[in-house]
Image 1: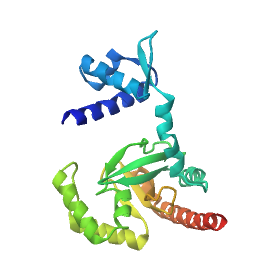
Image 2: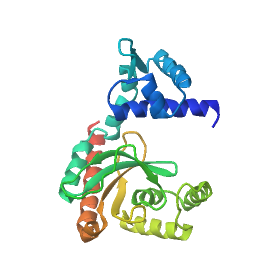
Image 3: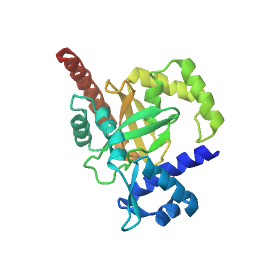
Length: 253
């Protein structure tokens, strides 16, 4: 990595370390956690303080994110959910399905989880907000690919294969799964990425950020397969209600 890439990476690691610690940290503690020399860490912390992204408490010589840093992303979480009670609807879907329900968005060759709603089941899938997983081979990824033209899917598949970040299914298998998803209006992953977890996903009608959003339900493979019909029905009902809700919202504006 060049110097700029190193600085950007270390800056992210500073905030990641603080988020995990959930308390102020000293320069020495931060240097250890981000695995950087203390002198370089001190220079970086001075820069972040100067940008009003970190504050320093001179009494304890510790650092903590500023209110400005918090405000930079405060609009984003609420914007995922639009204006039609999507958060409450997803929470209800988790309760009725009995399984963990997540809201996701694709980001190039990955899928990112932007919200997690736990179901009442005992042993459950335990994803976290911000977690990413490969586009190819995942239920959410297949559901997203089903909204794209074949030429785009082929180009993305070539890139994913050349980058070798994770095992990529054969193109013929991907296209077959995409066609099945288009017919069913949802996609399944029965333990491909994690042999213990199965998920079902579908595209979510949503226009808050003009970004594609998807909802997925997941849990232990055996239990999910036993509930397959129920989960498919729950998802389709959920999407139908969202379509009607979005139409009503537009009519009121």
